Length: 158
Image 1 (cartoon, rainbow, N blue to C red):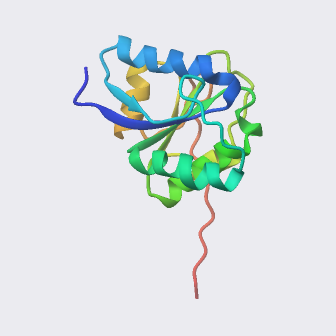
Image 2: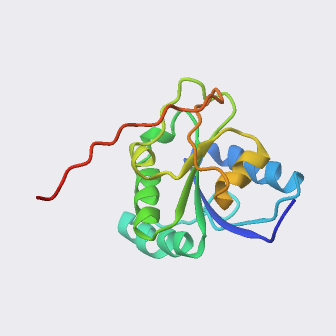
């Protein structure tokens, strides 16, 4: 159960507003208390200027959150805003967690998720909260199988 409310920002594409609500309901139904600062159809923004949206609407909400949760569905990879939100969260030293939507088999995550995510998990409340709190730091595919560790080339500065 909950060890206190967690402040999160759920990065998602507009078409996934229903999934965003489903994810929040999944967590609250399982006894977790979250406060979400993301923008969705229940609290829309009418701004048109991309720079304004990023600096005045999205950035403060990401700064407020302790964790940025990236909702991963088939079209998430196409969103320039999701890519920006992940990169901005990294610059702000936020924990970044990917969550595969149900039925996301065959889906690829955003490029910045590959670089910056702390964990990627499936659609199970306990696993999502364990990823948010740092108890899970592994990557799982949309099929629930743990991804093999990636080899990261290291170079000396000499």
